[in-house]
Length: 304
Ligand SMILES: [Zn+2]
Image (cartoon, rainbow, N blue to C red):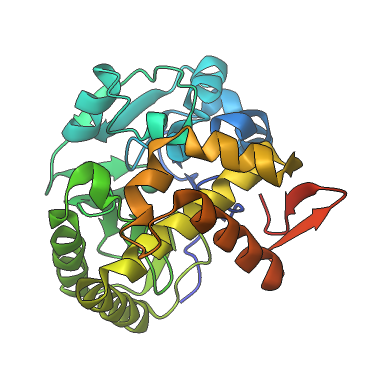
């Protein structure tokens, strides 16, 4: 199935969430707005599809900074309202840096205003389309997906990427989130889905196969938790390179070691020395052609 008319899928790189624009109905709707450092670029991309001043609604699928970073700029240009789940609203309005992973990422946070809150099971209008709001905990406790029954379209955010999902930060949220992620996959498998627009990566044209592959991956995490730790470490380390590049290996490692995540996950990944672990991760990126080290400086080779 191809994308229904009035839907636009802006696929981004590693750091920014994908953005979805729906142009039908009472003014354009934007779902997720990318990373704060790319806010101007996100607005430019959306502006190629719609008049930014006409945006009526911004939806955020969860509280992570790579999904809400363009909210402020878009609201300023349009006066759009923002809709999130009630759980996300609580995190955003109480500025919960811990649940937003801001301390994990050494990130700045520009507070996001919330106008409308949704609950699991609500039917909501995005443009002329009615979507079911689905709670999809796992990657984060506040995550929602949006399902459109007539077109069988699913906006999955970080609950489902192609054969994958957003990282599972068990050190921060608790080990039970793996079971939540598994339950979320089982919930999504109950829906008749033709096409998935995920929070990161490619559109998913074979949802059944993709969900099946994710279920297998999560079952493997249950048996081999060190694989779940490495899944997180690779992604967080690559994000750190992308945000700081070009940067010397030593400086990157020093900055990473000042954050909780290498310490939280080194032992979980069966490598008790966090510094050695970071060296191994960077060597692996270079070996696999995902990063380059030139004149003593690291640069990522994955799209930002
Ligand atoms: Zn996320």
